[in-house]
Image (tube, rainbow, N blue to C red; front, top):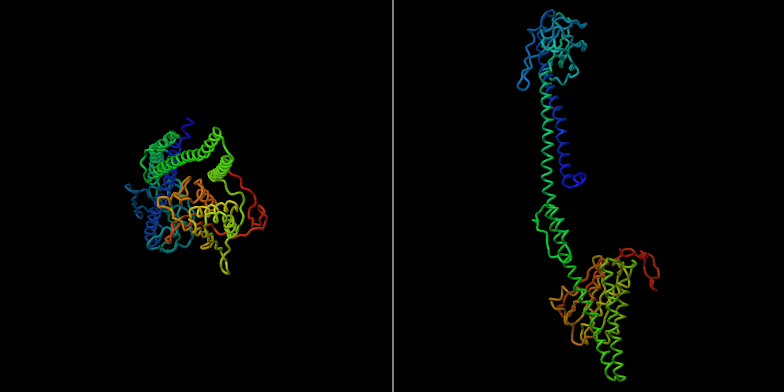
Length: 520
């Protein structure tokens, strides 16, 4: 049973019952009050009209009459019943009963003298304008049989001062029994209470059915997700993906499964590529070592073997460093410290660092730095200096290795629309269209010019994109109409300089020099 109370179906049904019950309870309490006020207004108007007619007749008489049954002729209809239980009492100025209708005989009506001067009778009658004359009192039943049984009724009573033709002041009391109105009011209350009970039960049943329909679809999603495993990532939740929330949730879960499947496949391909890339240099060195083992090597063979080992070890070192950096990005680790850096300095050091490689390939390397001028912002970015150097170094080296001798590689630094823009342009063969959307993927290498240099790892541009993403920027590549391709990096301009502090032997504007640990 406790488990039933904790289920979503039970809570949805309970909420449905609660709100429906509260709404119906407001009707049960409010409707009778509104109707009672409406009935009182009708009765008060009828009493006021009757009192006006009786007063007109009494004002024409020289003295108060001994009987007033003939003066009272009110027949008030309420709903389908007729309220003919009307009483009238004529009192002297000191409150003595002078005359009374037959129904009022033997009943002591409460009396409070109104103001002595009688106001002129309004036409038409507005009972609400003289509401102070009305009161609701409890009296013995007007019906003699009911009175003998000790029953009581509520009476709506109004008192008016009247002056006869001789100037004598008397008081007229006109009242109407509320027995019929009370019976109708009680019937209405019990009807509403019955409707409340039936409506609450019906709301509970309807809420349970509706909630069950919703929960059953959620259970199907839960069961499908429970069955997901690395070996069954191709399975999808078979639910109509409509416009409602459950349908959209099923669509999102299916989209998540597709992303997970792609990620797992990408991870498997990555492991396969890593294994292949690591196996290639190991196999080459093992082959050369076995050759040296079974032949008599000379000094030239040893020298060639040592150079081969050195070259492959360097490549392995770069590859391992790339793997570590990719793992760092994959786990969401932020850069070690945030500093405000001038992009001109990064570009200048990268060009100087790559100048020897450009000379070896016969490529001309040019640099255009950003000039802030008078009304232009400084080209400052917030981020990690070493990681941004990796981006620029990779782009410049990639451009050099895909250029022919005599080509030119341009590095241009600019700023526009609140962003620092760094472009690396080359005059190489460009990138085939089928590779333009893939060059930032792992181990993807576009065809290079013949004899352009040693093999790369296929991870440089992937690392560059990861660094740019960490810094909140964008990187894109496109072929130039005049030949070659252009890589463009855009980074947000830093608006705060921070404090000038030494970082890694260089003075930099530091805004946050506390290392941010990676999530575990």
